[in-house]
Image (cartoon, rainbow, N blue to C red; front, side):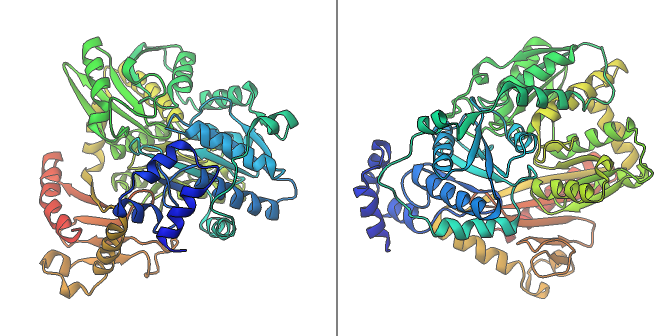
Length: 552
């Protein structure tokens, strides 16, 4: 069906909500084309897109179609399938998760639904705790307010595999795009096919998080916390309350759920703008540190106050600090070395630390599902207790195995316990980071993003990735011509095939380029090392224009 015919079918649909009708009526030809030129892609991260009318948008009909496809897949794969559901604070998140529950319930699939918004890690936990066949988290993580998404989890509590995503896509494509009516949740609640997740599951999660403490400390710690108007507010504060030694001041403007994110257009703790209010309050109150979690509370970012200045800690730096802390206090009966896992785009400083500490470090593709896949491999060998820690440069951390995704509640506990122990020694996280740099070397890293919107942008990204694979001799810059290139799509890397290209330069610099799996952008990861930290950062500044030139 061509774009105009699809557009007219949506206008005529009797179940079309007024909000979507208004969006349809306001479309010019460009907007119409972008809204209908394709179906919103379903992958290992499920769905993610801009809210609005059309097949390439997040709305009631794309959610209903995806859910019917997921339900058909589950009914084929399981004798008595069941699904756990949760959502964050985003626009229409609650509407979408209740629609998902109603669709699955009408299909005869048992549903367990959190009665209120809960973070992504608590959804992953519920899948495992309740023995479900799958899970769905309605969230767009750290994206701007105009986005929403639909993340699907397997029965292991981990985001679905490439194979499962392909199979589910096949079922989705066989479902109708539109419907004469949207199913209601209440009849499914009345029949019992859908029920709310109880406090027992929530309490079990809290108890498991508290079990991750490795060296409890009674030294008082004063922190400023921001949930960034997302789902972390209640669970993070409850865990810190139970720790007993943490005084928490909350950023009032970002405390309560609000999918419009009025104080930060990009609710991502990786970005300083999102941390500004927490930084200000940290200085005003004299707190030891500040931290924030993103809307679905799977990412955590922090900063340390020294005087009237707050220094933010990058995802790589925090990953190394936590790895150091956990390895320094690890006790295990296993004769085999502990296992840490990081992504290929995360800092090489972790490699140096693990080599010296006798830790087996596994490098995996970008995406926390690949970190959690390593836990699954340990499960299969009855070696789950070997798992020590997993992290990625984009502020994702995990030290337990009962959740199979990055967990900002877990990370918040580790952050505060680690900081309290250092405070007892008269140190800060920054002091410990300086010590680690002197021990393992001076590394610098930065991530650059290049935005490519719409259909033309998608074609431009494809062209750039193809161009990066041309003969090295054809590149104008001599550093690239003499580089060692690793093509993760075509070379034998021992990892799943992925559209990623890595360049290792003769001077020890490195950069990796890949398309984002959830947003219309290319991401470039830059790595340098120096005799000291200023030298490493100076090298990074010199590398940036070279990388920018091949991404535009």
